[in-house]
Amino acid sequence: MAMPQTETAFEAKVDNAVAVRGVSKNYGDVEALKDMSLEFPRGQLTSLLGPSGCGKTTLLKIIAGLLEPNAGEIEVNGKAVTGPGPDRAFVFQDFALLPWASVLRNVGFGLELRGVARSEREAIAEKYIKDVGLAGFEKSYPHELSGGMRQRVGLARALSVNAQVLLMDEPFSAVDEQTRRKFQEDLLNLVQNESKTFIFVTHSIEEAVYVSDQIAILLPRPSRVSEIIRPSGFRNKDAASIRRDPEYLDIVDEIWASLRSYVE
Amino acid sequence: MKIMGYRLPAMSSLILWGILWEIVGQAGVTFFIPPLSKVFVTLFEVIGTGSFQKALWDTAYAFFAGVFFSIVIGIPTGIMMGKNRLIDEMLLPWVNMFLSAPLTALVPVLMVLFGFGMKSIIITTTLFAIWIIILNTRAGVMQINRSMIEMARSFGASPMDAFFKIYFWAALPEILGGVRIGVIRAVKGVIIGQLLISIVGFGALFELYSSNFLMAHFWAVLIVLFALAFTISEVFAYLERRVAYYAAKR
Image (tube, rainbow over all chains, first blue to last red):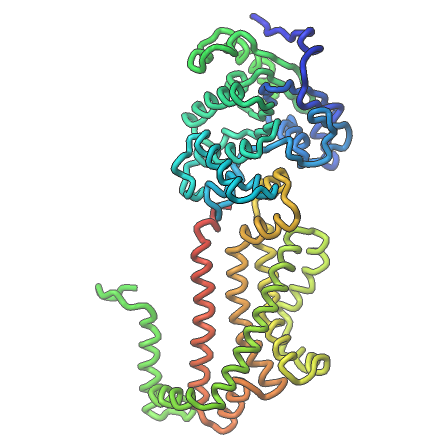
């Protein structure tokens, strides 16, 4: 089987947007993360993939500054993370939209919290609403939208604050299969067009391989990074042919082989 | 409701009870129940008098002041309790105790502390209304989705922003429910206050009419009071329905 290469030369010259060093996190007696280190190259999409209980969401929330690690440190652009900051934006699994606010206000809400004037933030929000394909729904409320459209609102909100790092916590797991495929294709374009660093938590192997420049396989008990895979051959192919690429299929198989023993 | 294919207008039961009342009153079963028609005639006689309007004003003033204080103190307290575990642990036993306490028995103590005037009546009204508002607000805040709070934090919400832009709105359906029940309890509070502290307002009218066996007058004032309380609680019920669309989707 063709093994994807972890290029040692690459590691040396790469510019990391986010670095995790020796992070541990305990919930009481339970070790959610133990001495975890991981680097996230700038402008690329890194997936955190693993069975449930491997601590991938915990790690994402620590990077977001929503959780405090018990040991270790996080650096974003060389600066230590002490809490949430404007350099990172979060996309939530359950969208976390304000049900009493219109799409326009929801998308502009991150800017509203930062004190951006109303006319300015609405102009920015309108641009991103259009970008995610929701033009015409500015005045709608979240309960009038489908799950997929709601997540587009969540994505537009995260994009509109113009953070360099986008943290996505299983963003497509609450939407239906066809919408998810469309999302994955759109995400590829997004990574290419926006010069942002994406950290993407998922439990879907196919999704991780499809969208990622780098996949970190996390294993539980004790939590650790077991492997880092960088798909290289099909990254520049068009969205439609990736799923038929032999390297894509090989990586999916290989990841499943290493994860299957951890799935009850 | 439909009976035998006919759609009954809203509140038809009131009409039925009204007719029954009239019959019992006309039959002269007891002086306690004069005919409803007589009650309404008395009502319109009484409404124009200066003493009634003064009583209405005294009662409305104490009532609205009491409701105002119970809302502006109760909602922030409830939000704090829902947000902060320590504050919750400290205050919850007291809130539960006062919710079920026989507050009427406390009124003499309030009189000693705050005198025999309007101040004591307003405080009594507040004490009747505030606890359920606190508890409902707290319950509303505690059911807020965790990710909503994380969203506010991750986008850098200040505590004030989180308070006014997230917690208040997210808990609004429960808050309105609490205020609606609180308002009804405040009606009781203001009358009990007026009866026990200083004989003013509607409390004084009730006292005057019932001790002189003027039952038509007594019922007339009670109907006015019921109409006022019902109207206010319906306003809040209407507001509750306005936000119900998101109550299930937070």
